[in-house]
Length: 333
Image (cartoon, rainbow, N blue to C red):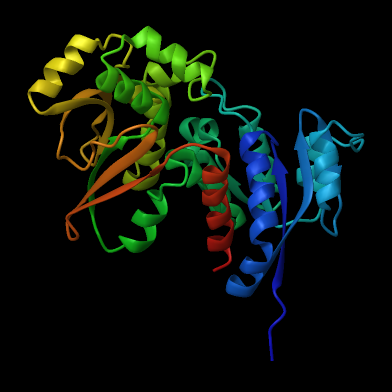
């Protein structure tokens, strides 16, 4: 006799690319997840700048599409959705704010205090208040999962916590920003100046209109802080990271490196001795860290398993949503 799937109700706070991606992957995968994992995931609330929609029996695709098109929202606030609508998991997918962590920080605290699990792609709250959030989650006997905040679809945190659980982690280093990797790859391949490739990346949507957080190394540094705190038990902040971006890299430097058998990549590195560094580095062409385009890569150095390298798409709404969906499933598995 078949067991009825367990209903897991979620809210999505922030309905941009990532939040929309979460709704899309749940639409695509709902039946498969019910069959494979015994979970029926229902979206019961969505909140973003366009407003709020709720339905405790599960939002229909039509209702979700109406919100996307700017249809009439409910007369509720985001915090009321988190506190008052019955659900088990709050997905926080608002944009990252590395200065204050808001509004994501308040959303996460409110969800935990309302006895909801939290799954987030938002780096800001984790980089600024990691220890406080983990202590609150433990106090409420709830989980915070955040795979999507570091490597997008590339599993780093879950790999370390689960598959490498018996290992001591010595260091993690890699390429954690697809925009920088794309720019350096194109500059090296075509011998083009930085400004030209940056403009190209902006035109095709790989770089933001204001690309400073990516190209100055800030995004990579924030991800390192999350790894430092979650993997190595540090209490690090962005100020603890030594950061150099890619804005001064020239085609001549890339050509000299290439002629000597190297590529220049923006590498983030964190180790158990407290090193936190982001800088352009020479990477041998045959090294596993030498990946091109918008790919991300991380080499995890362990005391038992040796070096484990993972490569994947670090950005993109469906890729980030796949990590969020995996985190939701892990809470109940």
